[in-house]
Length: 95
Image (cartoon, rainbow, N blue to C red; front, top):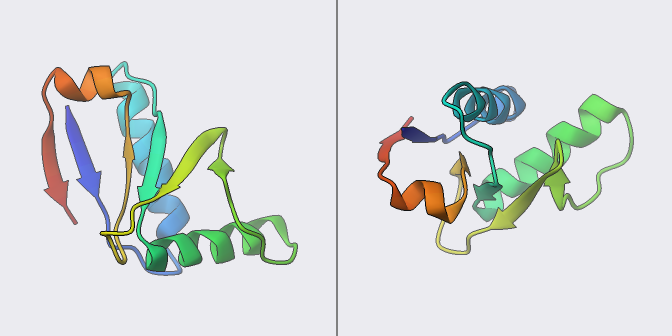
């Protein structure tokens, strides 16, 4: 299994997250968490507000997947499966 960590732009952040969700699902795994740094979290909140055409709000989930902020990240975002699935072995890639 490959977990991709993206450094998205405002224009492609939702595409990156949706691609990561689709990739995990196609691998037979359930996406459990969206992990992002503060910069990518702000982009995510703005992108969701634009898509839903409402004011910006803090986001706690996207497509029913919890969003977690990692204070050690800045502009990266990734979607990960359960801890059990990660312990089974993963390859990580930064894009």
